[in-house]
Length: 276
Image (cartoon, rainbow, N blue to C red):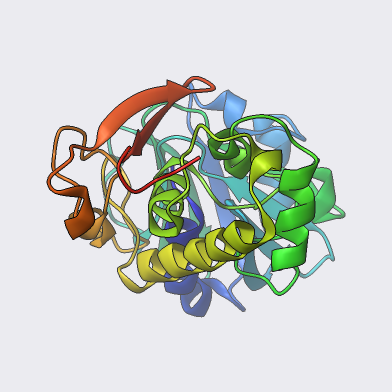
């Protein structure tokens, strides 16, 4: 699933191209009806046509297009969604689920292999993002916030970090990486992490998210940016999908990265340098 760095990379690519542009037509293709959440597919096509995109924002893993009628079009890529911009003459691709024609001749293509992506058209973005916490790269996501949020949870700290009420935008890749950077065992109870370790974990989250963003995201699977280019962060991760490889830290003396499941999610860590 595209996480905060991937979605923000897409936003940064699209925003200069779509801000101020009017939507001429929207086509949700047959078989992609589940994409439309707040309206029927035909209603959503009709509602969006003719509106102007004023700005493109993001919260966590959600893209938020502010429209000129004061409503918001909120998109979530889910597992395999990709939002591409290109020429209107481009042929329909195999996994293309919808197409948005803009008034400058460009087209946005929403591709989604697994068809889990969602679109909401709402008065307030909060309607489409229930039970969500602060964006993990916002000023609201402070050390105090993280300490209090973890202190209220007895689940494994890895599971707590994946809870979008704790740190919106953090997913499997960046949770594993942050826990390794901070030296925290992902199996440790969230409410057992002391203040100093919470501060290290907070700093590690910011570090790995910013690195992922600087690298244009991680393309382990289907992720591409708005122009169809892959990210580069997957080439320099420390633990994610590196099971069986030696830990990079010298003090671990070649101890292998392990892969386990926590809360049903694959988790990668080193038993040598990540402590409960």
